[in-house]
Length: 429
Ligand SMILES: Nc1ncnc2c1ncn2[C@@H]1O[C@H](COP(=O)(O)OP(=O)(O)OP(=O)(O)O)[C@@H](O)[C@H]1O
Ligand SMILES: [Mg+2]
Image (tube, rainbow, N blue to C red):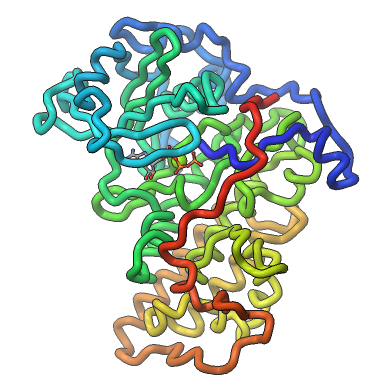
């Protein structure tokens, strides 16, 4: 649940010189749900209907949409803290899968049929996320996660199996994603991640986002980034972390929040400047991830030289030219795509990161473009054994320097992820 940026838009006012739109949020969102929505501590499903469930049934009522559905009622298992202590072997450090802004994530075991905790090694593996008491995130993000993931079902959204709320302990239990996150594969491995898998993953992620945006009462995900794209054993993508998600406005064109929250490098410019949030803000973040898979470079890295910290600001000009785009591709995957594929990737990425949200495509169009790219990539694989982009040995533009030449993702691979800043109390209006 990314909260790398968090500051009131009133403070952004002074930084950006743009309007502050504080306190005008009158739409349903992840934090407006009744706090009694998720208060059960016995083994029963969430009983009270949230504003989300009302909006959901108003719009689709359990109807299949884009091969996903809004469930007529959530079916989540309610765990006691003791249950999850058992399932994770007392939150043993060696069962830790990772750590994010919300807290640590542990491997746990539950019975596949009853979902009751089981002994380590028997039953099915799950991921248990436990709120860190020091975290700036808390009940609002936890509740948003339970409300959204409890109601939405789609092959490209991670499945939430249950939750625990006991005193100050807030936990979430998910299906286990054995291949980790896209971020892990792109940036934390020494070996370059294969291009065909990169494309497969972004197609899955695009399907997940298109599903959210296609709901009659659209859902703005707001935290699209490589670390929130989890991967099943087949490298099929599942979006995770709905702590910042919001229901789109029902009658107005944009959502306005009093606090800008998200992750540097991925947040859309209009949102950063004004707090206005659109589904097209997700499309921008999607474009940033496309640029990450093309280049193998992180969306934001303060360790890069001046002018290169933001991947979009740095490389946007290269995307518009067929000739230039091949020079920004990750060198580690040279030969795995054709120059036509690189050019098409440049074209769709460029459209997603347009500064004006109106000029960005809908996720369904992005999905079509990516599926086309995947088809021509496969066709090229079959028809040629020779790499279509044979070399990027031509000298790169002079601003690619200091070991961070675009295309030279190896320089960034395995580096620690850039530090967070601007983390404030997690509040969403
Ligand atoms: N369902 C899951 N299955 C397997 N691993 C998971 C699962 N959920 C999270 N993880 C792993 O746990 C780690 C922390 O995830 P988490 O979502 O808490 O943070 P993050 O997305 O990395 O960062 P942020 O808090 O900024 O969103 C990640 O490395 C992720 O790969
Ligand atoms: Mg995450």
